[in-house]
Image 1: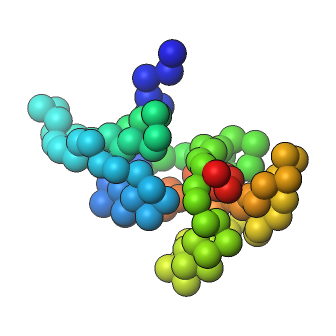
Image 2 (image 1 turned 90 degrees about the horizontal axis):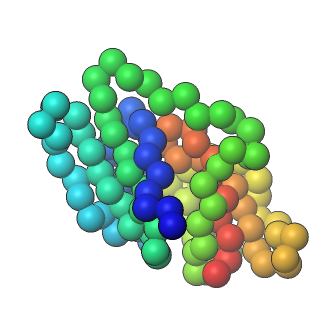
Length: 118
């Protein structure tokens, strides 16, 4: 059973705010004993963990094949709000292979995030 997935981030505050807009709840947001910023976000049964480490830069791949997929409710209403807030949409609203609404956006580090209507 998967416990969590962990990524680097440039700005933990912006990353937490982005995922909270998508329905995440913050379980931890702290400084580690080593002096790194760490946030743990719950999305349903899954956890995403982010570290902001001085001198380290995240390098997510820009292709949609490498992505995080999230179920969201009300994607048709949410997507324009995200666009107005400056979120980059890389694949606009379209039907997924299963016929549900789907779109791809980028998180603050440029990581691809698939939004799929729940």
